[in-house]
Image (cartoon, rainbow, N blue to C red):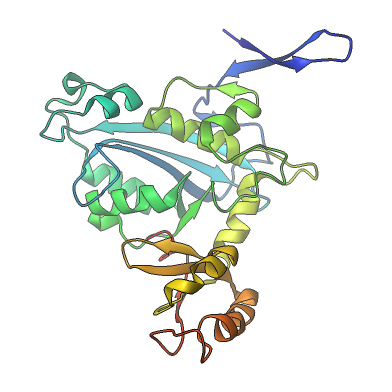
Length: 292
């Protein structure tokens, strides 16, 4: 069944309707690209009992591998894998509403650690739509899958340049002309793969863009010891507050590192800025360490 959504009215007063198709990603060839792509990626999504990995637990894990070619076209999609896991405690009402899961759905269930780890390690990279969230949970639950290369379809694709509003996965999918059923891990994995197939005006896929950005080295710059009075300048420069480490930080591309260091020297670490350190902490970031 298709859905029709009223998205406005024309000058003549007629309703403008967008038809949404149910998202269905069958196993096998997609029809994109030429032949069977030689490269493998794997999409992942987790549902959890909360937002804090130190106190929460994974209750659902979904994985799906896909093959892609040198031009970034998804040529084949493998079968979907999904596991649920009993957290050993009742779900909160909020999580139950968000995920659609109940305590009965999870009772006695367990993630197959061996199978999930083998799948993750079989791909060139792992991708989630918010890898800064998913990676931590995956590596905590599956420690033998730690240290893999990760990409992020939310942060490493310029969706606005592709004429999308926002970066929320479900909303991107709707704007792309599809809908899926509920906020479930397997549904989000399929939505992620479908969005990676999106082509811009030049025919370039979101996957190709993400891989190019994800393979480039970047630098994490932490404004260690910055005085409280410069916080507004740091925020305006694109730094974000890391509440866990109590420091302003920003990830920058290789060509941005030196200009960023010069700016910090003049605004944060100058003689009058009252910093408690001589300079920033700079850490090299690779696909294996990004989003941790």
